[in-house]
Length: 237
Image 1 (cartoon, rainbow, N blue to C red):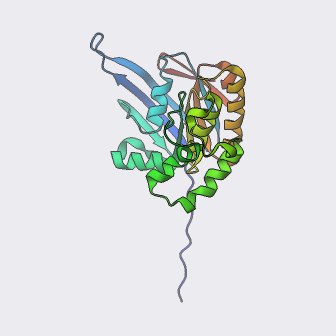
Image 2: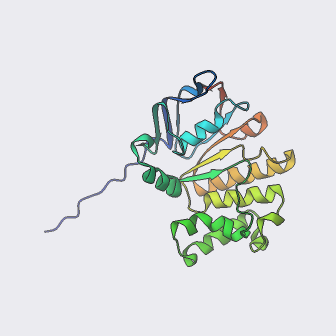
Image 3: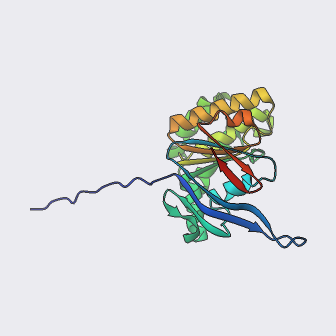
């Protein structure tokens, strides 16, 4: 008789793991700059991590490495137990498309597109049919209070509204890992707090893992765990 072989789903150990990661950039004057210097950490699945540091401390470099946008000079970056350096460029692009959502300080929205089109852009690039992603677009815009602005161009929005659109775009493909670079850095205090509240709630509801970098200790304090980055060295408390 035929017996179906049992299959076991193996969960990854961590959403993100850095193992003694160093990233150097060439500088004509000094010969080289270490943006990150021997950084090691592990981010559990579903956790919310804030990394706080001043401008130039290496925060953006860390996120670029986590997303596979850049590769380390030495050490290893793992995302869901996969070594990003072992992937070719096409595999890393697919990893970002399918598993990672990115939120930026300056929104990076397409000004000539509508709110709906900006949110749907990752799905359009992936070749997904509109019938498949439109319900998700509507759901996210309703969650952030912008359903009635779906047909407006983003040029008509305030800064806080644009960042909410950017968050929807980052979540449209239900990524397992969300990386945010100063997500409230271009907003006033009240708007920034509102956007941060929304981001944290959406990430929790989606069951995603969030790593965000910020210069604001107040915003960092909203995360479950806060680490500090100084001159390329990470302090984990």
